Image 1 (tube, rainbow, N blue to C red):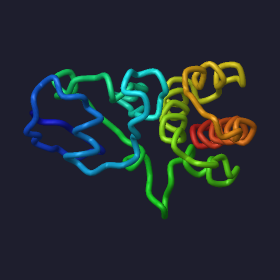
Image 2: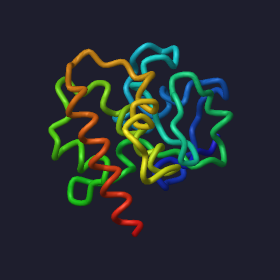
Image 3: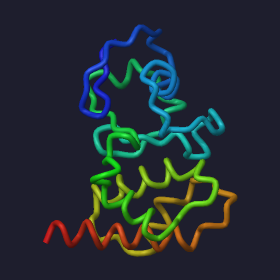
Length: 155
């Protein structure tokens, strides 16, 4: 199976029904997407597929061939982080960090669709992400900061 991940083409030797998350973590050694519930309910495994947020733990790789897959590692670098990553860093929007991969990827997907979301739209995009840290205020500040950075860059 041939997959395009973070702009690179990878030939993967796995059964077509293998979960994308397992290929990303085990075969491609990408640790941004996390294994949380394995049921697509917690959001820790979220990646972008063709710019939209998707739960990698429940998506078989056969449905990913020919599509553009982006993980947290593909958004930006330490030297040049994506505006969402930058905002999360500046707002110190983390505690344990396990859930952040999914939240960052979902906010990026939202901003791909709508560079000027309202706070209600941000809340809706994060609605199905499980987090027990208590960093929710900082996460919302980071999301709104990222929205401002993205909107500013497009103007």
